[in-house]
Image 1 (cartoon, rainbow, N blue to C red):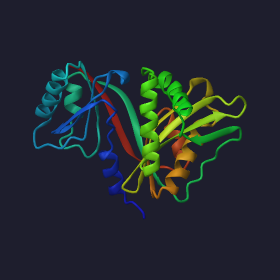
Image 2: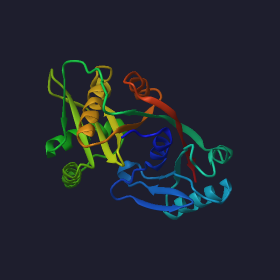
Image 3: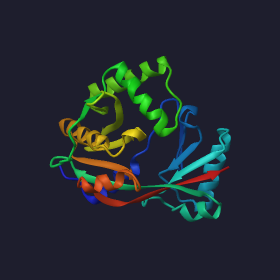
Length: 258
C-alpha cells in the first residue's frame, strides 16, 4: 500500500492527541483541555467551520475561559477552514513553535544507528518509570505517581497487544542508562511517530536515531505502510531529512492569553 500526498496531508491534519484525563470539544474546531500534569491550558486545531475567523476564535476563547483556563495554544494546518493565523496574530498571539511534517514509506527504511545503543520495546513497570524520568525534564511535566505509572503500563501493554500503539526506550551500552524514548500509533496504515525525547546530556550520540529506527521496524511488523512525523525544525527535522523522510510543509504553534 502506498499513500498519496493528499492522503498524507489528510492524515497529518487528522492527528490530534487526547491525554488521559483531558476534556475535549469539537465545534468549529478541535479543542482539548490538557490536565495539570501537562501544564494545563487548551490546545486548538482542525478548524472546519462556515463561520469567519473572528467567530471561530471567539468560540475557542469562550470555551477556554469556561474551562477556567487562561492559555489557548493553536496549531495551524494547511487544511484549516477558515485559516485562523492572521486573526491570531491580530489578537497578539505569540508564535512559539514550528514543526515540519515529514513522511516516508516504511518498507525501505534504513536509519544509520551508531554502535553502543540498545533499544527495547516498553513492556514493564521499570521501563515505564524510566520513560517518565526522561519525559519529565524534557517536556517539563509533572512526574507520575506509582498509581499513574501502573495505569500507564496497562495502557501501553494493552495497546501493544492490540497492535495499535507502542513505546520504545533507548539506553547507552556503557552504563545501561535510559536516555531516549519515543512512541508510535498505528492508524489507517500510517505509523504516527510522536513523543520523542532525549536527555540533554545524551544528545548528539545517536539515541534519537536508534529510537526512530526501532519504531520503524516495529511499525513495519504491525503492517503500517507510511511513517508520519512532525519534527521540530531546529532539532529532529534535519535528522529525519537525512533518514529519507520527505518534507510536506510546516505547522505553526501560537499561544494566546485569554
